[in-house]
Image (cartoon, rainbow, N blue to C red):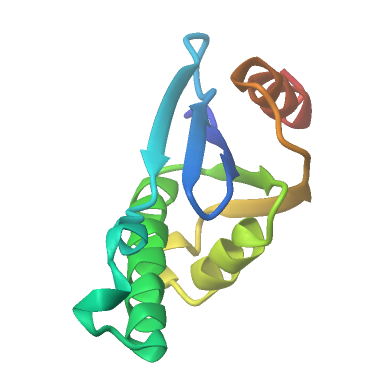
Length: 126
């Protein structure tokens, strides 16, 4: 019987910490959202609507990169202090590629990486 693959993801709108605890050697990966819009100066003539569209496109790309990883796992825990986890969960529910992945969402505070890993291990009973 194949062992279940498990991942915990702490995320906000700027960064995601991914904890693959599928085997005895836990792996950690960090994915940063592309926040180039913070570097754009108003003098370039971009209006507010254009800036919001750019931010939404960058958020969609960030969530797509996370979805590409999530679809490889059987069980995934999304957690963090902002509503980014719920936004990603809603995107995942629209995506047929993750139909076989059990995704749960939990609220948490800001944590150190060690606290995040402990949170994930506790959630999965490891």
